[in-house]
Image 1 (cartoon, chains in turn yellow, cyan):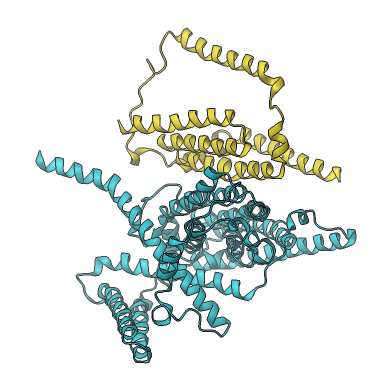
Image 2: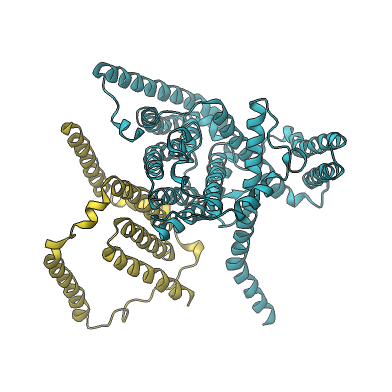
Length: 172
Length: 450
């Protein structure tokens, strides 16, 4: 019961603030709502007993990426940005993509012939002591089962970072 | 039937209500503690500058924090006309909320921890307290003032720069423990019989510098540099909102001091906790309390008014009482089970206070950095140093495992690693400086210097 209440609480906040984030005109308000949505998602992770994901979500997205976002937003001239019509050319493309996505999700439910939430395997909560410790489990799967994809992703990020530095240097 | 029901109720209360009540208690007491930290800071500053500091309210100004709090609460609350009202309202709350939330993960002694045994312990504390930056940035933006915005920008740039160094310092200490759980970290130090400050001195130094920068304290208090930016992001805030920012800043100080204590200074462990011959050290805490109490009794007749004399005696009585509480588990066999909790809390608070004292000492000793100097120190020295240190600590640990070294023996491999890391980082810094001097150009970070 408590689980359900908590889930709908976090999910409601996430969806509502995501919607608000897209519709606000003020960029800083949008950023605040994006932070709220990210935090609510972190709450859902915590509820799934994925503590490590919860804290990584907070440290990386909220504490790292969003700080940079807000930093950049403050460097841009907001008054000019407010007067421009935003995203004007993308309206139809966005609508098309949204419809395609909705169609995909609908198709998935239709093909399985069940309503959302029905017929899914019901997972019973394991006793806390019997679960493997979360950060250890994540580390095991990253560095044992999926070492190569992990390394490839790291190299990709490194290349992107070095590329950004090189481009920033060349301009001056 | 009845029995099991009551047991289930107790279980439920323990799970949900005990942490909640503890949290409420912490939130209620913390402003008082912070008020007294401010008083202590003013007293230490006065002492270092050969002054007396606050003396008027209560004996030796002991009631000054309460007077300050009342003043702040009844001050006029001003919101600038062009401010973004909602964000202006939200920002200080965010700052203080993040700081208070991160306290939940800390363990003050083996017995006192609000969120018991979280698997991600130290990450929780660090990650949640880093969220407080939004309070500063949004507050600076919402004030709609140039000084505030400049302070906020400096603050976020500073935090992003030093977060990496602090994180790497934490990683090199965590390499010794292999766990993120706060209790297990302290237990690992108890098992090794040596604090990690000796095994990873470079990491401790990096964390010390980075934590000063992250809490926006002097000499890195550029976001609120009064000679350039009035009061930085706090310029437009007054009264209660301003005091919320102050509360957040000092709570963050407590948080970083607690993290450093847990990771590097042995948490709640007594010095030489494993050595039975030095059990006589258990008498240090009660004797310390006795000494402070005796000093208060000695000073009491010198107070000017009768009320102040009584107050001084009351403080002395409190110290004696604390001394009794501390001595009981050592002498009385019945109170023996309480030993770990009470003495653990004492040593933890003692170490946190020492760390905060170091913060204050640095603040009154060093002049403020310029912004490009701050960025140079962060990016050109601390980050390379901490990354090299992580690598070398890893190598040292492998070498230690190869030679079967443990405890103090690990020093044989970690000390050379620390020295090599320092030399390499200094070499990088020197090379950078030489290159900059050759090019004769101003650092790009000068842009924010205002």
